[in-house]
Amino acid sequence: MIEFILLITAVAIFLYAFLAGADFGAGILQILPIGIDRKEKTTLIGRAMGPVWESNHIWLILVIVITFNAFSTIFWFFSEWYHFPAGAFVIGIIFRGASFTFLHYDPIIDNSQKVYHWFFGLSSIWCTFWIGIIVGSLMLGDFTLNDTGVFERYFGHWLNPFSLSMGLFVTLLMMFNASLFLLMEAEKNIPEWRRLTVRIFIFLILSGILTHGILFLTNFERWKFFYFNPISIVLILMSFILLFPQITSIKKRQKAISRVIAGAQLICIGAAGAVPLYPNFVLMKDGTTLSMISSAAEPEVLKYLCFALIIGLPLILPGYFILMKIFKSK
Image 1 (cartoon, one colour):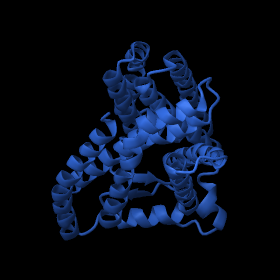
Image 2 (cartoon, one colour; image 1 turned 120 degrees about the vertical axis):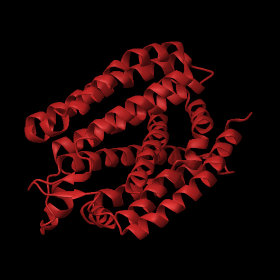
Image 3 (cartoon, rainbow, N blue to C red; image 1 turned 180 degrees about the horizontal axis):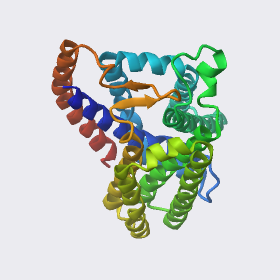
């Protein structure tokens, strides 16, 4: 039962990272000076990201509900130790959602559109950066459950060079996913979108090297734990090899192939960090762990949760695909 629940959770996290990542990244691209008229950018982003925007939080809600019911200890731990980063992320989602709605659906067009435009872009940067910081902090595990000081408990474990560099990496990763979506959907300014995608791609690679270097220099033992794992090495190599067909697909604007490769790269990157930890959720600096197996709920709770997922997912997925179809229809 627990393996099935973990599988559904992993799939939901991937879908949120890929779809919401593209959504967040599009918000960032909207405020970048890339030589394309702002109105054209806004129209393209609304058309390309509309179905993603309307549905991506399904997967985040699913992850939260599963964690709350199946892994309550982990839910408590995350709510407590990541109170500030998670709270900042939620505030960013609120501002971003409100600004997107007013930007696209406000019947009165005036100077306030500029305010919505910038709020949407800046809150997109804000959200993606905090996601990266949380991921970096979980990988670093620079805390213990016995931390009682305010700084150590709420700030120290994420306020470090590695977590901040991971924030930059995740921001660029989401920008790249968005640029792929927009390049494949664009009917105008295609050379500009292609150049932008390639440039973000290069910065993403450099950011990945920087992130690895910082972890290597500041915490070699943790770097070795994650990246000396044979499976992690294979996954990282696969992600690197996929760079070459990705470049080709970008040049030829092969929509389906490019998105499949981007999804495969995201899976490789995420799995490379998750595989060494499994079945633990986090490894702390004193050597203790918080395990997904040991923190699981009672078998009876897991059984009913499995029933709910088996019944609920077939109801969600058709509606999800119908929504995508409606938004994409002309």
